[in-house]
Length: 94
Image 1 (cartoon, rainbow, N blue to C red):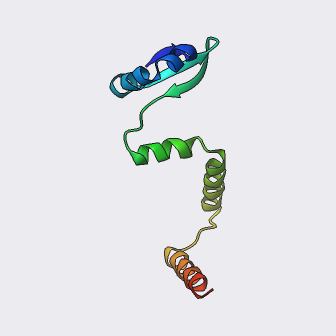
Image 2: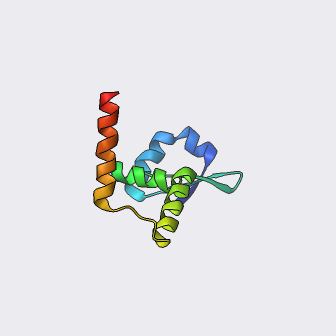
């Protein structure tokens, strides 16, 4: 991983993208401070994981779910799919 100033990355973005593919992430700096990271996801799943890991909305939902599980407030697998099926039928008939 290396550091690169924003002005240089803007001027040579294509070259930096090629470099990231072979050498790994580049930390982009602005006024000497870290501003962003340039990286290449390995596949669509990797991209989705990266985006979700940085999503405050998703993290809030995940934390609520963890608390519910810890408190014993869970739904049985069969009940979940029964509810999904009922909702799909309801939407189809509407």
